[in-house]
Structure formats: C-alpha cells, structure tokens
Image (cartoon, rainbow, N blue to C red):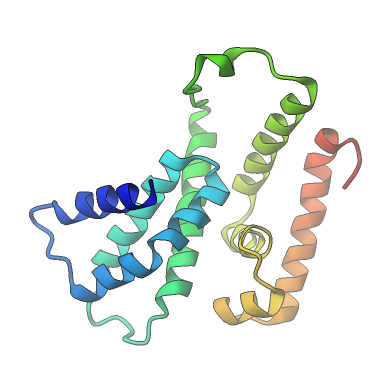
Length: 187
C-alpha cells in the first residue's frame, strides 16, 4: 500500500502541467515522504488528512525560492512543516466543528465503555493541541509524537534546551488540567 500511496501522491504533484519539478525536490520527496506522512498521521490520526498535509508540505517546498539556503536540512524542515500543516488541519477542523463520518457502518454502533473513553480522550487531546500556541504545539509534538529529546528539539529549532524544558513542562501542566476527566485523575 505504501508504494501505491507514494506513486499516487507523487503523480498528483508531477501531473500538474504548470509545475516543473526540480530534481532535488523529487529526491527530497522520495527520501522523506514517509517522515512527513508519519508525522502528520501521528498528529491528525487520519490518513486522508495526513495525505493532504504531505501534499501541502511538498507544494510549499516547491514554492520556496531556489535561492533559499543551500544547506537546508530537508528532514528538519519537512518535520517542522508537517507538524505545522497538521496543526493547521486540526485547528481548521476545530473551527468548522465538523465530525468525520465513519467509513464503516459498524462504527455507528455504541462502543464498549473503555473504547468510548479512548475516543473522547483523543478528541480532547486534539482540542488541547489545537489551542496551544504554535511554538508550544510544535515542541510538544516533537517531544511526545516524534520522540525527540529536549536537546534534539533545541538543536532543531535553534533555541535553548532550558526553554524547551520549560515549554514542555508548561504544556504538560495544561494538558493535565484539560485531560484529567478522561483519565480519572491519572495524569
């Protein structure tokens, strides 16, 4: 399925008649598309949204000036771009107050008690993430969804490790308050 997905996404970008894909962009796509998709999927929890984020990120990269920094670290840039685009999707969904329809009619059946709690927790987590400032959301995502250490985040974002630790701590405190009802005070 990954190969089919890759071909479809790349084909949708390549078939645009007015766009000439530079070789370096195609190489970056082939090397890093799974990183962008995986990052977006972890945040949105939805493959369709992750595909949209993937296309958005690479179209933005295509629109960047060719005179941009030649030492651009594609992996770092693409991870950050995927996080920001995925957060935009979540925030837009929150603003629209739309609920995606289930793909399977069995999803319309009442869930088991534990399953309903997990679904509510995920929605609450997405709401809490959408309400964060961009920098806090980015750092939280890098730390807990991508598994980067505070030192790696500081290096990636060009900020101090102490600032990363402070933002992670404050964000966790905020999440504890907002998610406590879903976890029965376990946070």
